[in-house]
Length: 299
Ligand code: ASP
Image 1 (cartoon, rainbow, N blue to C red):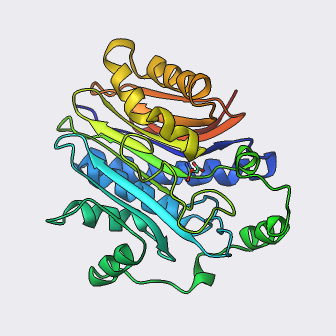
Image 2 (image 1 turned 45 degrees about the vertical axis):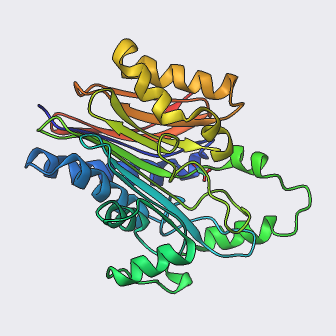
């Protein structure tokens, strides 16, 4: 089986001046991880590694560069899922960590639970060798300025703000053994209510992986994505329609039934890619043989 990987770096009206940072970021993730996959890295390791790179990149709303919540704090959510076992790990409402997706990976390996939130998730992370960083290590000037511009704006609406910006990251991979995996990581939506959790860490909504059907990762306004369980919906459509049409159809369902906007990436068990968005632009990169295609898809 030829290994494959596709990543996304948000779906929104990415302004021209941010295009090159987005393309560079997603390109770097695939360029780094695709050769490792070809050397035998598992799909699960590959999606974690790719998302780690995107979390480190301040361009995106994940790890470094995350949006601030209504109280001016960073709260992070992430998930990872293995398509062979259907096992998964999820974390939500975590403070100031560079790699929440790696905490989710550790949660997946734990004996008694698969989804941890808030204080309990932080305690689990600290007990497993992760460190809470000083907020200034994750906070960017861009987000601080944005936060101050919307902090006291009474007309500010989550939905409108969302259609403005959505920089969640995700990765989907197929390894040489035919196993699929997905991972997604986010700082959520700007000025979100403390404790608000969107779709990204929720199995089926922010990501899904099943060796029999396919794997997917999404980005978009979480409150609407959860209505249609977007990634599971896309994966269920892959066997009959193929990944490209499945992605389009799932997005059509998000728009028609969920009244939502966003984007998703997916891979079929045979290693074919699909991606779709109903936002003006989406940043993505994928491995094609030894080449990397990184681009902004335009609607
Ligand atoms: N899906 C994320 C959330 O609602 C936001 C995003 O994709 O940018 O938390």
